[in-house]
Length: 434
Ligand SMILES: [Zn+2]
Image (cartoon, rainbow, N blue to C red; front, top):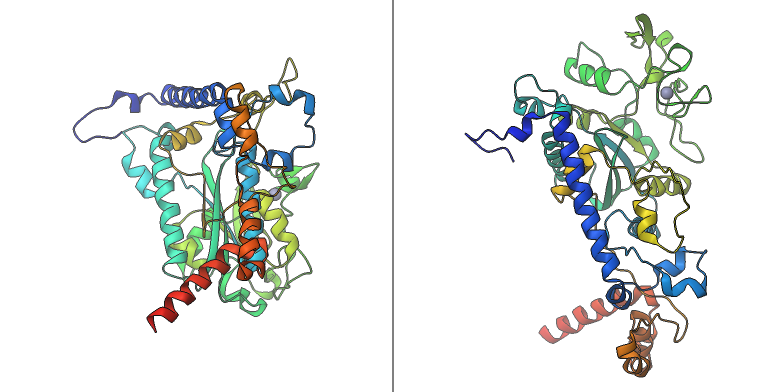
């Protein structure tokens, strides 16, 4: 912690401080995993319901007794990630495609960060500061979007935080709006052109420092976006006089060519001058870019295809550098998770501070799906008889028993049940009041 009038020497140790944070977080995570390993029988009875069954195809019944489970309650585990993907699909099922996809990256040059650095420090020496400031920035960005309704009323949202290898965090946000964005409104919200330095020098400055891709391609083949000699993000993009919404994926935003009198800037790439035109601009929202002064890519989601890509993107799990001398036991989920787990300093600090890596609104509840008597019953030698007599009820078995006695419930399908019953209760309360 930074405390007034106290010199915390740890904060002066630069790389050693980074190493210390990563080591400490590795210890914390190892402790948590050890707890899970030592409490498998309890976890199997109480926590582990059905999801593993749904996603695992390699299960072999005879190995089942040796199964070591990493439950979905462990943040960042494959099951946890899988649940988030399912939640995103629930939103899609209820509300259709999201309207906006926003990728927002921590900017180490933010004044809030630079002001707190000690003399001679770089922001990379102080991931404690970058993590705290970025957390605050995400909160204020979400506040801006949801409470201040910069894009209109928000129906639901979710976000997920990721770290580049060795690097700073970025967040991917999906926004569903009550009033959907119509294709003819895209040009009012999303821009992909260099702004006019005369009328808005501030925005021009933010865009040319944060929102120019690469440049990559033949002039800079070492750029990290280059895969097999091509830019994986498909820059430079085509210049078009008008925004075109295609059948799938993102639309082609309006990028007027310099022949039409639009602006270009000259940047230095490896000591050579390179003229950047609108084809290199990453789509942005002028309002968000000016407010947050960071890399903030805003995209219009146009079809169901882009959702699939985005949900995967939002929940692809932590980076892994796997190197093994011996294949891990396929039934040991904990070892499989730990092997090649890659934690950078910023993520370590983020997790030590207990900052969330996902948030969403509204919440989603997971309900059991199984065959008759097919719910998983876990037992120890001590409670076998009792378990066999009274198998645990699940949301599904309770649904069936309510349907036996309640004609109203019978009219609902399983997933409509909570809202349907809630509406009925509210209706009853209202009619009593009248
Ligand atoms: Zn590129």
